[in-house]
Length: 552
Figure (cartoon, helix red, strand yellow):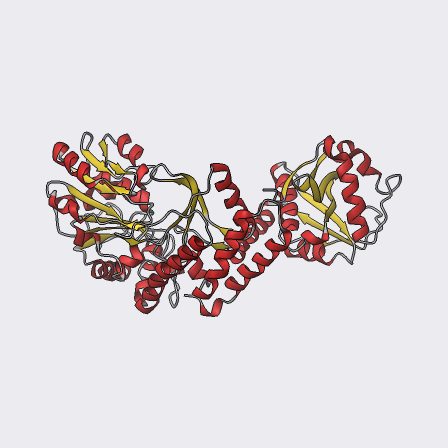
């Protein structure tokens, strides 16, 4: 795939550079004068690279844009900022400009200037948008307008913050592990960075803060809402993420030498969990895997459990296309059974999937920012009042200082509007199924689901090779469709993981699915960079995201 990429100039580019400038000058009704005002282009190495840099935007072997930086007196000047007309309005101008600004900031350059023509509406708008300001003619130039930016920490951070923020406004998040939180009606800013205990203050407390009882009351209400929705005896919301919850839970309740039977990475378990548990001294055993059916081998796993009697059984399912039935684990009452619900929490809360508690699990761990549209937080819930839970509540305080109450209070907001959560939960499955079926019909190499199990909000695409998988990922990215490239479980090799959770929050609807699938199929077979197709897809994506009034 030959999508445009930015790189630094090398001497082999000399002839192609001259061809490019002849073309781009013609597009702008200018004449290239290599013996006069444009003589710098004859020797780019000396003109720019000795005290600056020269960048090329290339699409395969073709140069489609340039930008340069050179030193003048006590400042640096941006020069030769051009892009072919047909490649404008695709974000490449921003890419080149930010390449220069980043290079300058990282190299201690504190001031940039640039001269432009009044007719250059796009570049002048771009400079103004990113905090360049108008100045007087600084080099006896024949240009019309003159701009400057002072590169201090605030100006550079502000520009890059604005740019990064625009990414989420212009790209469709089409993977199952990123989401947009639902915080309507409540402003929780006052709770940021304060310390809130889980109980009222006492004379025997080592450290206490004033006027916290009202917040502790809110904390108790928040936990009760979670208890009710999960049908749990108790919950804890101190941990910051799913993996953090894993670590804190086992640090609190396990000891070195304890055994744990773990869902392996091969079967969709988290790639960090095995090493993490080994580092705290646990003896880790792995569930046998049925590679053909993409699930746990129940018969072999049962024999292994009977043989080793693990203290803990941990289903750390971070990946899967089926909601696997683990109710058969209930018979092993001597083991403490834990389920990570991060990929399924919204459907569990709304009753679409059976609760892990009903399948015999003792504890549920889950992040609150993946499948569930909540904050960067996690939850640990217990089915019953147990000695293990009492130990966790005591020991976990050793590893957590600030509970980050703002995100704790945010965590229940989606559940305060159950009509929203129900609709979101159902659509996450419905639209994912529709996209899966459309992709199948278009002969996209999706991994087929096992009809014995309920489908998850995940789609796996497995192209023929790792290279083709990565190329498809990049083509989708260039088209403003953000998927997840990764090594798939069950020895399937590398592929793409798709999901619609975040896309639904951005405005994706059933009426978009057919077109979305067709665009993915077209990109899958495109061998050369099809500018017309990319512009068409960009308009389609912008149209989905722009209609914000009817988002779920």
